[in-house]
Image (cartoon, rainbow, N blue to C red; front, side, top):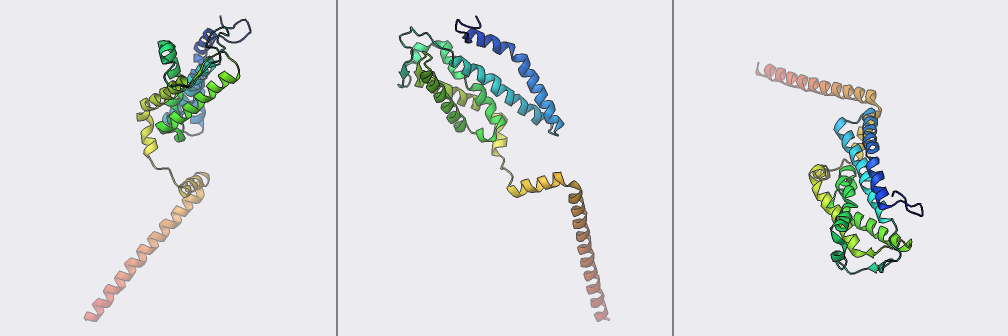
Length: 232
């Protein structure tokens, strides 16, 4: 069933809607790429940025929605809080463990590719940990009859960090390159906004350079004539 008796989405319903939304996600990637191409961005950066943006949303939102599905109120662990690390792992099972690892995996993989501020495994780890703590807090505060566990936070953050390591070859070079200074940004903006003035300045500078070379040649010629006259 997609909806339960209270009208809320079930876990099965979220999975079905995620699969049905895949063509829309692909279409969004294509549209964003074409829009960036229309703004003058090269094909590869436009495609890379668009894919990363859509993948972050498409890969993260369904997982977060799954964590907000209410549990069973008659469960003995409903609404429990577990703050002992690794105490709940034996009872989670492989499916829950893999699911917790995957919740922020898309953000960890594509976040550093898209956002310069996330081009660090530690930053991704901290961001995922903060997001996971927020989820566990909401589960407890909204009385969703779920277990708020520190192990969920560890798995969520760990999955994002591993995903960031896997995407490292795609963002390490951009992270290593030094950012342009404000003066360079301003100069580039001026060149893009006023190309004609920039061209005239370049012609003027070229003319000054030619004049300086002519004066230097004239001075050498005059010096050679004086030395020749004195020898006579």
